[in-house]
Length: 455
Image (cartoon, rainbow, N blue to C red):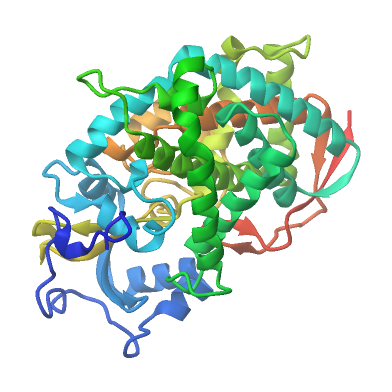
């Protein structure tokens, strides 16, 4: 299925059909007819993945959501798929079945030369000048919101979810908080919820119907603004995208700008919400590390005014964030589809096969991470990083598809941590370890109960 609605597999220039019985020779099992292991994997994806790995090894076949799939597990598997020296693995055909009706032509759903060209054009939005502007807007919004949390018991996940949506309105779109931003946020949330809904067609009263309606609203909202934004030279991310050009100097088409904006808001919002929640939980559970980060925050900006240039000095905070991403990666697995035959661990896999790699698995492998369940930011000292397999830590993907906004993520988390830790202490109940929903993006089922005690 293509990332473009109405654009079928057979019309895709890279599309190849998997031969009949093409992966039956691989270790693994398909489970019951039709449904396969779908519900088992959904109920506890981590337990299912480890059981299959322990039983069959680093390559195995399975059936989920009505499709035969092959899982490739480990750092070598990540390198094969993400580095993709031979342009074997299609991201468009991997993510398309999940996102094609809602976020078509988003950067993550592009392949090879098309992806390279658009990624290069969009990188204008992440240069130092625009990033300084985003940092200022993020700082203002985060400071204002943290003040309303201070001294209270809160459910952190829904609170940070609201904040990241509002921050997207200011730093991404350049519009103030208010009714206009609220309507955009509602449409956007409907699209995200539809992407993981059971119904994959916009039938009446389904999440997909609401999501498709949300996409229609945002498309109609963004499209007429593209030309206006090009003339106004605004500093927000949407305006930067509107002015992005290809190598030949031509501007991205209006519909391309709109599709990239829709997708980027989705990718940034849900992953930041998840990863910020995980870090806050871990700092609440490990007060000794919370104190170390607080000391760094106070040392970096003793007057309380964190600047863009200060962010690079928050090395321990960045290491703690990386460790939280290791323990609970916001994108636990990554789908692809092979457009060429390939080999892995001595097995031949035919073109047309749906394959997946797992950050959630490789991040817990003892060969790379001794005592893997322990929270230890010191795993990310430069010396430790040099000694590890380069693809043993992949929360932002890798290779050509490395997350374009990863430095924006670091920036937002550092500003958030500085604001929280210099004014409050994160407190959780002794022994508190909330149950997590790990698919499609991790979140605590109870919303994460924390108390922010004023310092």
